[in-house]
Amino acid sequence: MNDHWYNRRPGRERVLLFLVVIAATLAGWYRLVWLPFAQERARMEKGLADTAHHRADRPTDDQPEAPWLHLASQWVPAGESAGLLARLTQTTGGLRLIGLAVQPPNRLLSCAKGLNHDDPGTLFRQELTLTWEGEYPALLTYMHRLEATPWPVQVDHLDYTVHPPTPATLLLKLHFFTLSRSPFVD
Image 1: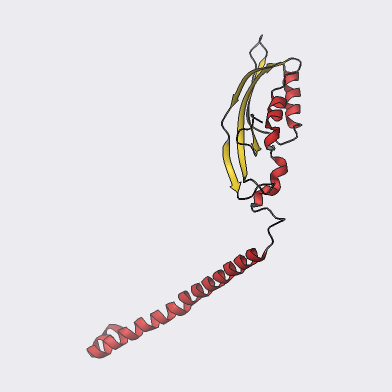
Image 2: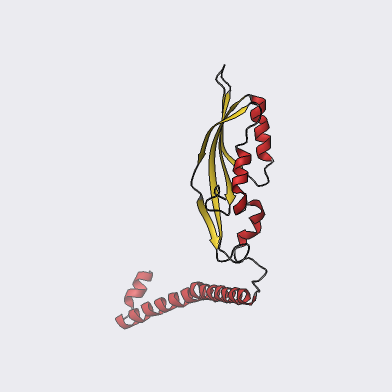
C-alpha cells in the first residue's frame, strides 16, 4: 500500500520527500554521531593543553627528565661493573669456572640528563653466560652468593647437568642493568 501512496505522488513531491528523508537522516547523524565526537575531541584537546601547561610550569631541577631514573639504585653504576664480574666469576672450594661468554651490551633507554645532570643517562642490559663445574653443594652455595650481590642479577636460563663420574655442570645465562657501555673496562 505504501508503494501505491508514493507512486501516486507527482514527481516533484517524490523528489521533495526524498530530500526531506535525506535531511532528517543527516540531522540525526549530526546530533547522534558528530556532536558527541566533536565534544570528546574538544575535551581531549583541552586535557592535552592543560597537561602541556602543567608540565611547562613544573620545576625540573630536582626531578629527573626520565621517569625510569628513580630505579637507578638497582642498576650497576659505571665504575662497579668490573667488581661485579669479579664477584660473579669468583671460584670457591669445589667450584671451577670452565666457561665465560660476555655479549655486547644492549642499549635500552636514554635521556637528556643523567643522574649527575652533566652526562646523558643511558641504560644498558648486559648479558653473561657462565659455565661452572662442581658438586651440588658448591653450586648451591654459588647460587646463594649470586642472590646476595648488591645489585639485582637476573637468571634467564639455568641448566644443571650431571654426568657421573665427572662433576656436575651448571650453565647460567644472566643479565643485569648497568649505566656503562663497556661494563668490564672500568
